[in-house]
Amino acid sequence: MINQQKYFLGVDGGGSKCRVLLTNELGEALGEGISGPANPNQGLDQAINSILSATEQALKQADLPSHCIDKIHAGVGLAGVNLPKYRRMLEQWDHPFAQMHITTDLEIACLGAHDGEDGAVIISGTGSVGMVCNKGTQHAFGGYGFSVGDQGSGAWIGHQAVIQCLLALDGLRPRSELVDKLLSFTQCADTQQLAEKMANLPPSAYARLAPLVIAQAESQKDAIALDILMSAADYINQLSRKLLSFHPPRLAMIGGLAEPIRSWLAEDVKPHIQEAIHSPEVGAILYIKQKSVISENV
Amino acid sequence: MINQQKYFLGVDGGGSKCRVLLTNELGEALGEGISGPANPNQGLDQAINSILSATEQALKQADLPSHCIDKIHAGVGLAGVNLPKYRRMLEQWDHPFAQMHITTDLEIACLGAHDGEDGAVIISGTGSVGMVCNKGTQHAFGGYGFSVGDQGSGAWIGHQAVIQCLLALDGLRPRSELVDKLLSFTQCADTQQLAEKMANLPPSAYARLAPLVIAQAESQKDAIALDILMSAADYINQLSRKLLSFHPPRLAMIGGLAEPIRSWLAEDVKPHIQEAIHSPEVGAILYIKQKSVISENV
Image (tube, rainbow over all chains, first blue to last red; front, side, top):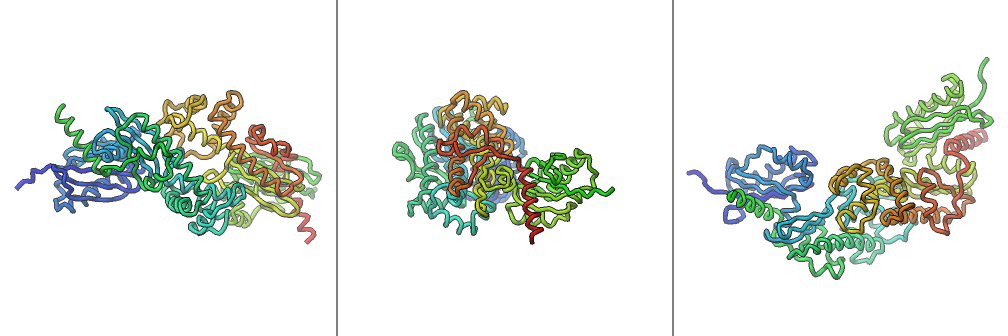
């Protein structure tokens, strides 16, 4: 008996991991998968392998044979494909799916957060970025990466902690308990060690310090930690106000920093932040369904 | 006839170039040399080659044969040897000089700036750092490198220009003329290009933008440029006050940013800043002479 079923796959691929969700035509979840980095900036082959490996897992979980991959309609949201070069590279991939459409991880997050309807989304995890989809137009702000942006993100907060604690250790700003917490967490005995060990690290390594800063700000009213979180919140406030100026029906915040940063936001911003309805993977499925409808109608 | 003369060599080795000065025992300049990077963090062989190549030039300029290198007493001030690992590596070098003593580029700058006497010095060039030598004690502040420090330096100012102009292009802060100047200088057509082109560059590349920011702040009263220079000056103010708290007889500022940043400093700091008496190379010669006297007296 030939399996005539049609499947949908939602792919959310970022710089550290790739998550997929497999559903049937009714939208029922059949299987999930998780694999490594899928940002094509970090290597096209790696991105493709991550997508395929997570898909294989999802098929297995759904008790479907590998060859069913040619019945899958895949919506693929990836970090990095906001750069045309990487988007083209992915689009030239001789993929094994029945159909594949590619967009940014940001767009599928926005679609998921608002169940495919208009809305705005802020992602604050290791990095930060904002997008609004309203009345057929899309606008993105930020997302320029750790080196020249990503304010208010986990990496930014952790990096600021290193910078501000070094200033405090030099006696150029008042010292707070965060200094000792940071020295102990990083197992550094002094200023010189801290400066050496914490220089030139990848964003994910700085992001690992963010929970320390948040804990100090929340429970200890630590002056350095408070300054950092207020600056982070200030950026998210500005970004939120920008997105709200497009009058989206909803504004959601997702990512690891979304919850902790929320209580630090300004009073004019806080009431606008709503929960995301679905995950980005579900958003990716909504995306491929939209694209399929368009293809069928063309 | 055998040349019984004794020579002194001052070496100032940094991350981009190495300058040397050769003098006779009377302190008369005989020759100079300039070569490539001499920071051992970037490669020990390269550092040694740069020192030898600049020395060779100085000997040639002094009309002295190469073998006279064994009559040279060398004072060597290098970036990077504040880290014990690199200092040890250099000290194990089987050098061709009659005698060699190694210290940081910061210490020779301080010695040069105050003619071997007590004093404090701030270096603000591509990076930034401060040191005070007073009554037999030394204290250094900053100098942690571009990744986690170097506030108020050329690299820091240029990097801030990129960050702040991206915020302005996103409409998250008011735009100023610096945005257009920066886009034009970097030959970028839009936000996305600027973010891509100006991310993850070496400090020297960001430092190249500093003159643009300074010019905008000085002549155009550009709000973004003014903010950046005020923040840079704020760090140099804090650093100066810290150094002045040790009551050094003099405080000098050297490096490419020293002159332009001076007019932005606070009124309590400005009157304390004095000219450096000599170059760091001369400081390196003062250093080797001090060490020679100590050796003779031991």
